[in-house]
Amino acid sequence: MPYRANRDLPMPVQHVLPEHAQDIYRQAFNNAWKNFRGAEAEREGRCHRIAWAAVKRWYHKDDGNWIANA
Image (cartoon, rainbow, N blue to C red; front, side):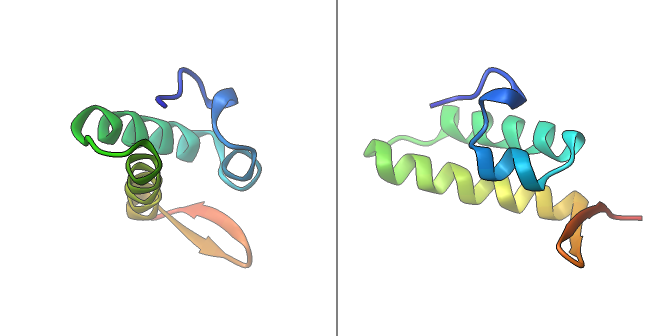
C-alpha cells in the first residue's frame, strides 16, 4: 500500500530515519509499488527492500544513527 505521508510509514522506519531519509523511503516505496505487480505480501516486501536500498544510497549508518553521505 502506498504511503501518503511520512507519518504513515511503519513505526520502525519513522523511529530510525531522519525526516529527509523518510521522504526518500516513502517516494521509493510508492514508485516501486506502482511498477511491480504480484501477490500483495510479495509485492510489499519487495517495495520495502527497494525503499531501504534507496535510503542506503544517500545515508549510511554510524553508531546506530542514519547519517547523510558527504
